[in-house]
Image 1 (spheres, rainbow, N blue to C red):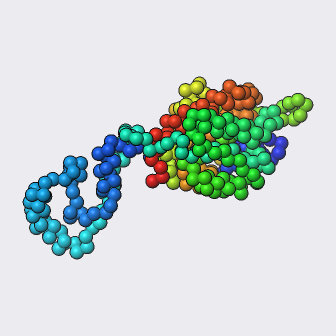
Image 2 (tube, helix red, strand yellow):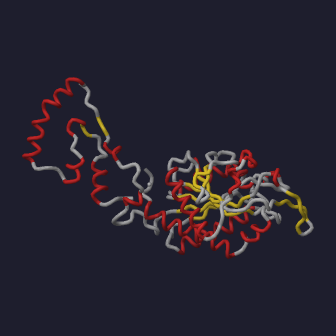
Length: 335
């Protein structure tokens, strides 16, 4: 994410660009129960959960219970003139995974599910510079196009590629606005990684001075805890990370180390390589679930060659598409 290059405006890499700002329908019974108790009701006349599930009791039994409750209800009203209004929706089982509640028709139709694939950086503010003097933006554009094509091939026909122009900081807010205008259900920003300037080493490539760091490699996935749909963002990020790992790829562990300085971040899932980066504008300002993928390091000389290969691009785009296929059936939409 941090970067280093001869051009100081492109030294910041993915972090340089973005550090400037920075929910399954359950079985029919559960879903109907939850839906039926969303409306505020009088606490003194609330049905029991068994009544709701069974569809209520007979009129005679209900009348008998109502009569037996009158003294109690009257005492409560006398003690508290103001009736309390409650929302029983709070009784929703908070610890039950959304996947466990999924049954019946899928609520997410891949044909209509809008995924905004954001090309990190711009042609004017092109991010990090690779060990072989290639702007990160070109890597981002190529991989993002591959991901877009793969998603569409897998049935996500409403996928849109976002290519933004202009200077770094203004472009961040334009990305958020564009994703909102597209009514995107999911936002994915594509980047390639580098290292802080202090970790760079000098070398010449094809007669031109350049910089590299072979100490670190691997992908990383980022979410913001300030995103209004953080938990959903985290779910998709973990799905991507697990797919990357299943393909034999390793995540960049260095962001947990003090040597990374201000680029050090909390590791949320060490199996999937998911970090939190709360300051990233495109993650915290987006209204929809948002994830940033650092596909790999282009400042590492060996990994740069791999990142440029069709095989690696196919591997990563397939991982994203598989994650999307897992994610879509479980997504209920905004809360």
